[in-house]
Image (cartoon, rainbow, N blue to C red; front, side):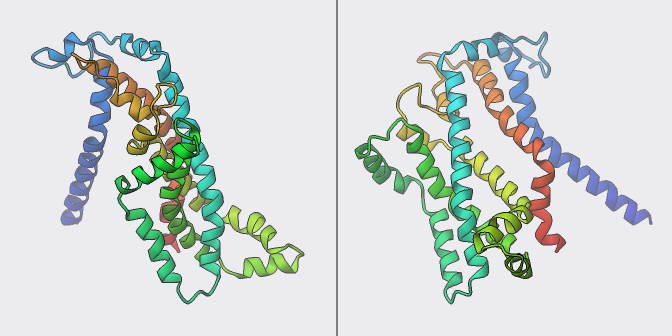
Length: 275
């Protein structure tokens, strides 16, 4: 019993250490965002702002284009998520249900697209999008992001559709549903945990992506949050407190999304283990 108790104590200590390790950067960014610029160079450092100030957040929103940058990130991430799920769900359903001889090869090709270096696609994509006059538009980011997100969505959803028995579609067809109706009305609702998991992962990827957003957008009004944060630095100074405040503002929507759909995400990540 004593050995079991000691083991549990060490496990709880390890969990607490991991939690502290993960939350420490968020705490420090929040601390810096509530401090004055002069307080950042004090010795010893203040581990809590004394007193906390909101000037940095006011400075962030005083920049005219930053609220627009946040809106751009939200629109691009939302459109990418919807388009990826709209294309990936039927593809994953077909891969899970059809008896294809080369199914493993197809899945390997999807994986190959996912691991292909993004830097190798930037040049051709820029030329193609420039000829279509799509540079500095939402489409210039949504299309590449969808291309990069599709393999992940297909892999996750193929697993979830495979766990659903085919008798569900058979019963729906007997009741008068067409195959598309059976897919939309029966299969998709039952695969909601997988859809939510994929949606959150895709949204976070599109929200955080930097390389394509930097190259495919050049005007302040078309940039997304990661690019705007990178360009906060001045010519002769780095406004760390203002950058930290902008970082907090950019992190809050993602944290809110994860907190809102936490239960669905956990269900999606653990459903394969439960079965």
